Image (cartoon, rainbow, N blue to C red; front, side, top):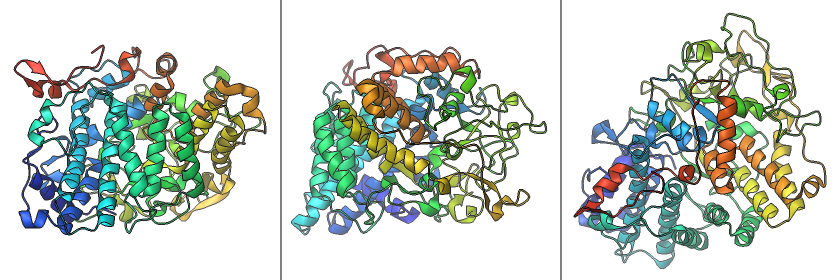
Length: 604
């Protein structure tokens, strides 16, 4: 399901039709139009409302003829891939660019941000807009008698899946948030307090969706039973309900299929999860569907939230030099002589991956010759290696900060479209690029590694190792390695049979996890999640739920601060920084008679 512009226009009208308008305490966007009662209270009206609830997933749909999007910003503040709140704050990457551009991200990266930081308010408003749309579907659905019981259950399940997704976002980001459902009139939303744990309600929404959604859907972008099961298991894992989570993970892994009917499986090539030409594959559990060149003359549907995250300078992408992978992350892909990761020693001086930091592009540089996990070069753009089919990454001339001292020498890669298919999958309608590459909310490798974590928590260490080895075996498939160009003069012509670097990766030998014990096995699983899911918005939230954020992130600041200047002075304090502050704007708007319905998180 690619949400085209004309569909979005309908859904935005529909969203404002049934509710008076969203309360300003949740969202500063008024209704943009109205459907007639006859149009709204019909099967077609419910379908339109449901499209609107899906369309809010990317948070970028424009209203007022393109003058304002859902977050009221240019879009990146509420990016659905959480590149700021999840990846940068988790140590995957630096803000990038230079110190004068988007300084609010620097504060987030160093955990010095206060409740007035606009990124928090934008995320809050955008996600609550999605909740509002899902609630509208549920409310209106109950008032349309012409819909069959079977269809009613399915539509309700889709809306509750989406509501569960939106609340999961809020829960992991802010923790203490008000639960506003279809029973609460919009005008009363500002009165709802944030003093009740919403995990049981999130779990209930996913349980209902899991029980009532079909295994397949007519549109690939729609949630199915197994996406709901995966999200339910994830919610159980976050609550440390390991036995219950195992039951659901077992069913998902054994029986799960994608919405388009493909048996869940890892793709043969890791890179196929980050290419619009190969998306919606067997690994896609639930993805936000992106579309380029959709006739809207903007990139709202083309991952506008990540429009800043392309190489800068004389690169072919025009803008903007943000989201630069960290040296700490790059070092994490170093492997030992047998192809296993250096879980505890990756930042030791002898293991640091050689970079071109401080070396001009017109000066010679030879890339690192040591053994590396091949996932590195599908995750990070580094000098002297193919940047997809755009040529060899030239280093400093693509980095915005002079000398690469501010945020390092690297470029992001999982979000980059290919030169050969740019006319199809890139969108140049704005001052920075858009892309048709889907955003994977959950992919099957994520499911497998969460299941491995559950098995380890239950002391089923052999099964935990089996799951981890599935992910590592895929990464070790040579046909999926990055290769040198067949003809350096015309890289678009294709690749050679020669790997681009010294790749060496292996599965864990039988009995390894048993020998490590529960704690050691969990440490290995945590590290595997780091390198498999890097730059995908998971890292910060993983560190928090594992209870190791303070130790890990302060060690990151100590090491990475010797490499770059941007995160020096960063300091994570638990438990305060385990959740972001409730936006001050929302607290102010919830105040009536001098009393605020919303209470600030502890420590802010």
